[in-house]
Length: 371
Image (cartoon, rainbow, N blue to C red):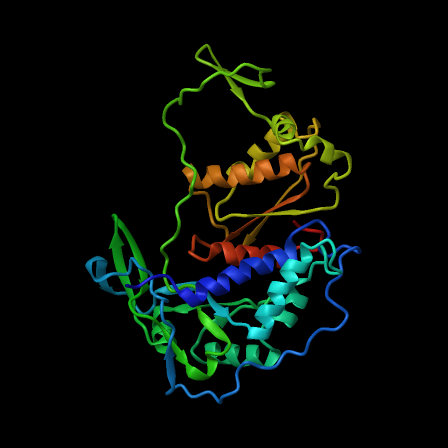
């Protein structure tokens, strides 16, 4: 039974943990943050064998489970653009152990590393492949015609090309598939890479365009609500002579007892990175209207400051649940965290690996404290 890349899943899990090591908390890149421990451990190259493309290793589990014969429409054109693929990089066992310890220490108040975050560059130096390894991998991709991007954290390496180049380099063909009335493309078999690269490469994430669906959906009819005794919310809407009560940020501050926190933590000088894949309606005007009208958890209004960066060309607005999810995420993070500047980062087009691309892009664009 074929499934999603097991080795990639582990590496992506650690990649997301890496975001914690790099980006959680308000002290990232601030004077209070310590970029790394005084002594950075020496990292040995993972690639030790000479490159021999006749010696190949199959990256098992790197075929999407919906890329099945019953959905197959045949081989895709060799000129099919395949943009922003991600080569998932490995760490040595010693680096893996060191990263896990760092993640624990950053949350341990008794540890000297408590809340001391790393810059992406420092993270890459400590827990990523060496410069020599990166040069070897990059040169291999470029030798097959791929355009290779940069990576500061060295958890993944972005590259773009065509289906023909993928077939030449990874020894797998890209097929077209029709699933639930939607046409997709994906690799038909697990890819192969030179055996010499295996110590530094976990897999490819990914060689397909099966994307996840938004978790939010717009209701087409009213949903019944039950009224409970107690003080009514201050935010009400009237439509067709019916009054609707809504929870505002101020209500959440009371319900979850956030109000005392606002006395000591103001959110000033901190940037929230909101990861998305869809444009906000009217350039984020809905978000700013909410902050300027409804306000924030500490009973203030106004001062909305929204910054939108695209990780690549403009992605467009798909509307529906995509727009709703992007708007909700951006609106409520700022409403509870007292209106820090927001970054909504999207890739060039919907891709299965957009979250990882956007996280990497957001951190690379950030020069102020980020959480």
